[in-house]
Amino acid sequence: MEMTPSRRKFLQSSGALLFGTATSPSQASRAQQSSTGPIEKDYWSLVRSKFAFSEATVPMNAANLCPSFRAVTETVGTLTYDIDRDCSFNNRAKFRDLLEHSRHLVAEQLNVSAAEIALVRNTSEANNIINNGIDLNKGDEVLIWDQNHPTNNVAWDVRAARFDLVVKRVSSPDSPAIKQALIDTFTSQFTPRTRVLSITHVSNVSGIKLPVKEIVEAAHAKEIYVHVDGAQVWGAMSLDLKDLDIDSFSASAHKWYMGPKEAGLLYVKERHIDRIWPNIIAPGWGPDVQTTLPGARKFESLGQRDDAGLAAVGVAAREHNDIGSKRTQHRIVELAQRLKTGITELGLELVTPMDPELSFGVCITKVPNGNGRSIANRLYTEHGIAAAATGGVRLCPTIYNSPEHIDRAIAGMKALMT
Image (cartoon, rainbow, N blue to C red):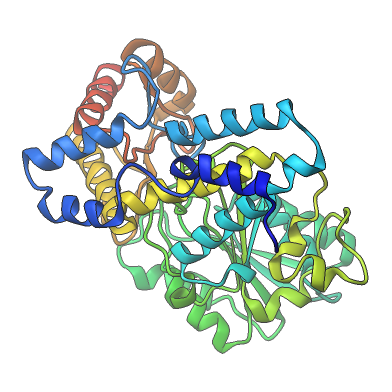
């Protein structure tokens, strides 16, 4: 695509914001190699400075909503103003390049091709594209985890009622001791009629982390399509979707990815793209769709989008690249383990497994008498920690949180629950 002088000028002037960050990959690598002890603390203080929240109200509910990186917020504001200043087709033409830049960065992070990535509006939309779009016949069986989000759970019930499918819910052990118990939970329920397995990588209601790779391998041996809701892992876990061999994967940028609001991810393995129908038909869809919206882009046929937000996905991607996905994952596990250890030392009971092989960043504490909402509200108003009442009291620390934040949350739980 030929770039006009006006588009080239804009991209050049915005290059530092959109196509790079203050830290180069080589600088980031050197920082990671030397970041131990006090230097490591200084490094994470620098990461904390990339977010605008006040120490008086500390977010610790990444499973629901995260603050965006400052650079993301600034990009959305700058580009939104640019559209308001000149909303002509001529001026907005540059957003095609910015969208593709975001797509390629996300694809690289997940080790898949850009043609397999659709940047949709959120996990819910991505889940429903798969739910509504995959071809199934009367009597076909869909296996789901009873801990899925409603858009990957109730949505299947709705489709089953419309098209006479069989939906079977699977319950995992409340306190799994070993990974194999979780694998067996699903593989034991496979039947010759099972066509789809739709699961969640990390549960938002228990914090259990499923051994996705092993479950996918077993399902594929039975020619079962596997969709994974990755809302609690994108931006938090080092992911290689090609290695996991997932057929489709969904996530939201407003959670652990700390990106723009109303932007999400749908990955569909290349060989499955043609068999999945889009939910919405807007301009760009038609007889020539394969040339206008090739690959997974057909799932982006949604009408007018927030072009500034889609461009800012790429800014969030650059921030993640500077920190490094493995470093991010290690930090989240470290904070989550500190939190869970502190909770159990208070004599409180966790819903979430202590073992990091069976859990990740979602940490839930059991609350007697259904008082989770009251405890979560008081944790915020009295201790300045934003939590949630999901499955108990849910606390989900991520890279903008510090050990001091974790200790404040533990002290709050001690004051409120012991």
